[in-house]
Length: 57
Image (cartoon, rainbow, N blue to C red; front, side, top):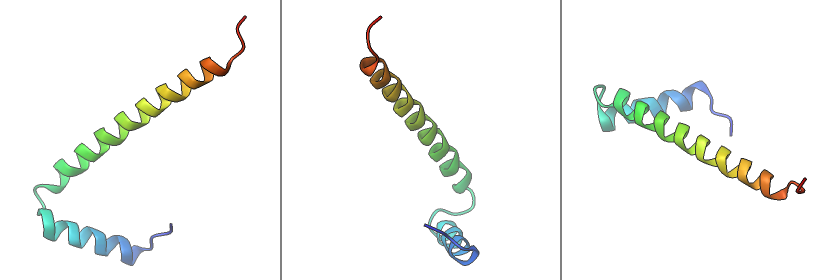
C-alpha cells in the first residue's frame, strides 16, 4: 500500500476538517499509545508461543 504525497495531504486535510487543529495532537498521542500497547501484547504472546514450542530440557 503505497501512499503518495497527494493522498497523505488529502488525509491530513480531511482529519483537520473533522477534528480541528487542537484535537489532532491528542488523537495522535492516543493512537501512538494504543499501537505501543498492541505491539507489547503481541510480543508477549509470541514469546509465550515460542516457550511452549521449545523442547523441555
